[in-house]
Length: 298
Image 1 (tube, one colour):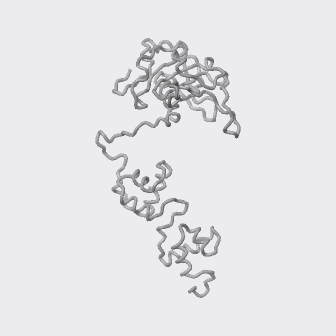
Image 2 (cartoon, rainbow, N blue to C red):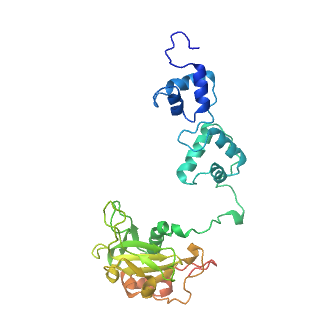
Image 3 (cartoon, one colour):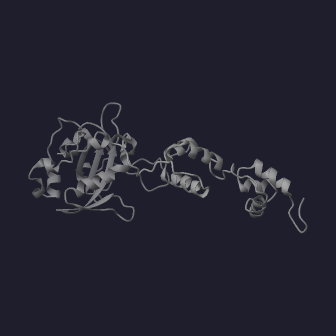
């Protein structure tokens, strides 16, 4: 029964039934004939009646009860996320951890990533080839920095990815990658760009050679190429095998493999020699970015 002076159009029994059959406070409000945004009053009365809302998920795909059970049954946060059946990314992990803290769940048994590990537990995640496109720019920054070149990122979107200060002045570098060979065994690298239109199906177009100085290309086998834009002017795709003279290094161990093309020439392109500086190239091997799986660097 409603109390005297209570202007609600629903009673406590209606609220109990709505809470039991709903998955969110918005759904409760709708069940009581209220607007979605009018859940404050039902929440206040639910607290008075001490109604159980642990099954609520809101916009989440999991409820408080499911989270509680997942935390209790898991040994790390990755297990919790797997039990809940959601994608393990930074945003979802923080959301789940924060919700667990608000619920007062005991998470002390969930192993911290900073906990002391045995040698075989340090990090053994496999390489994911599809992530090469996201790591290529970082590899390029390391490659140029190791050669004494200052590297900067443009603060606004530009046709180039990096600005590199070299002995020949500032070079505008576009970074490209190719994770796998074609069905015919070639490394076909896309070096074009899409025009700035809403239609994502628009054909790619070549970069203006006056807007780019260098292409830094890394392949799925670790091969690294530095090619001047004048060599690739007007092209939107190349077969890397045709540009071996511009191959300047090998980072295959970063990609979990053996050295790329052990018989590949260990020469440094004339252009690369000029723009980095001949003084750095007393021994051409120093120029190579070679890191081998055995831990031996050249």
